[in-house]
Figure 1 (tube, rainbow, N blue to C red):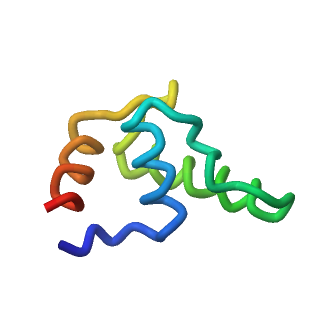
Figure 2: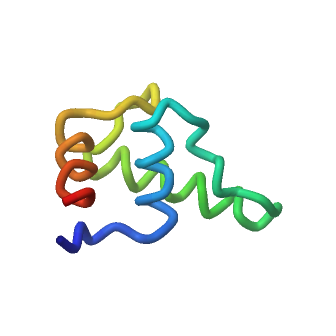
Figure 3: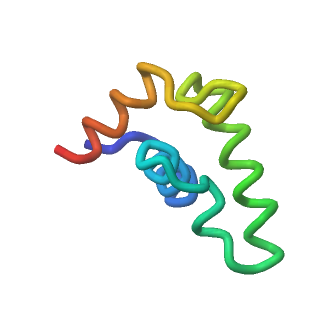
Length: 67
């Protein structure tokens, strides 16, 4: 299923869901800005809360992307 998320957003969501650092995919200085934008987008979409924890909607996206 296409979740409509960018590769960076989906990676951050997976990292959060697995209890890892959401910035695990950021390896260069330019990646940090992309990671911040991805987190902001995930918050606006209601997939993570302001503490960078998954919401029920975020868990649903992870479940559907794994299927």
